[in-house]
Amino acid sequence: MPLRVGLIGAGHIGGAHARAIRGVLQHELAGAAYVAVADRELVRARRFAELAGLPHALHDGHALIDLADVDAVYICTPTREHRDLVLHAAAAGKAIFCEKPLAVDLVTARDLTAAVQAAGVTNQVGLILRYSPIFVVLKQLIADPRLGRAMTVLFRDDQFFPIQGHYASTWRKDAKVAGGGALIEHSIHDLDLLRWLLGEPARLRAETRNFAGHQGIEDLAQVTLGYAGGCVATLVSIWHNVLSRPSLRQIELFFENGYFALDRDFLGSIRMHTSWGGEHELSEAAVFERYCAIAGIHAEAERDAARRWSLQDLAFLRAAAAGGPAFPDFAVALRAHELVDAVYRSAATRAEIAIS
Image (cartoon, rainbow, N blue to C red; front, side, top):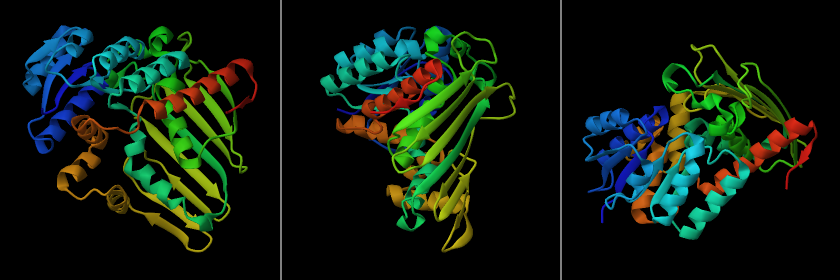
């Protein structure tokens, strides 16, 4: 039976996925359909449904999960709502795409991971940087054994506080709903990325600050991660009020015999300097072409999805239609949650945390 897709949460992130779903299904998965949207603001759900020509617009995500003609569910609600929706969808045997973070705390993230694994449903989490062309190419470049050992990584991630501008919501200033601030809500991506690029850290030490004054919501986090091989990585995550600055990531990586730098998190150039090849810049176009070669992307529909940040949606929808595994799944996201939890514990105790 062709795949039928429902979306819960018609906000900024839900809107991005809705556009991706519509785009993917125009070119892929014959007979598949986007059929339902739910949002606590029924007017917003109806607007989404009208734009996409959907037969169902609901105000309750649980009612959407219960629809017989929905096989795969996107959960794009505020973080606190993920728990009940994921558990319901897993029990109903629905394929699940859940936005990050999975939950407001590590205990719940573990419970949700266990639930989807026990249910055997296709599951994926919105750790979108795993599908970023610039980081996929960077990972390939730094695998060159001639570079020697990684020495240090300097990583800055900043964005305007996402309770204004195009986010059009305020829930991220409420710790009970979001679980925390810049670290869990945004830089869970960065901790996952560092783990992907460098491997598992052995220890970490962290500090957090609250400038905006929202209780339990850090808007500055500084994390130092130590690796068994001697590398030290520093992550600084910032929420500020400069609305003209979108989400921006700047990374420098130093190896014994090489240096890499980039200041984009999706498409852009990579600057490098090696002891054997001198200074070189891989252009944005070259990065994209190399990414497509690494990922085995040849069809124009796939290339278009890759350009639009929607390759993660294409991957999930294909996996859901086949009833197979998706990536990155809840288990990958759980490891990122474990690192986030260690950061918060270090900041609270001002102690170094050993990572097991």
